[in-house]
Length: 210
Image (tube, rainbow, N blue to C red; front, side, top):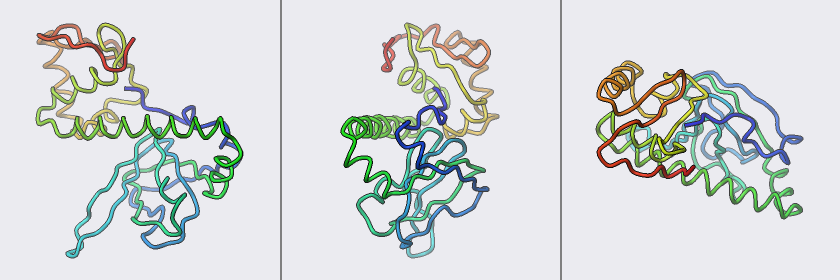
């Protein structure tokens, strides 16, 4: 799975975007504060949360590199949740007014924006499905099948294995052991930062295509 970067950020928004940094635990915005911006995660992660009656944290979404968040601010006067950096994060901040204006005047960009949001929604649904799997090996295989390319569902990692472990909801120790076991069993092959399926009982086609 490619860990996206600012290359995935629409060129039409670059002129109005500002790069901002947050330390782990820092607040990006709070529930009820006036909406002002939409954000794109260049690196790190930001969780969108609400709080229950007993003060428990309910995570609505965990925005990762290559994803926008707070898109709902385009149609709301106030933010409906808290956004908190889960780790040190670099974000691109786009004023909501600038994004609304671009959507109004640039039909081609509007189509690109819809395509981007649809792709992001598919990725989030795939991640939720993956995190529901109990076994670490199942999560690795799901990643390769759903996001890999070619006959062996090849995935080139732009980040580290620790980044991959966070994305899979695993500790890096568990991921290392799992990858080593899958290699010994002839299920996957690793070459540098590239993972691929090399043998499995069913050999399903990769959903990402060739």
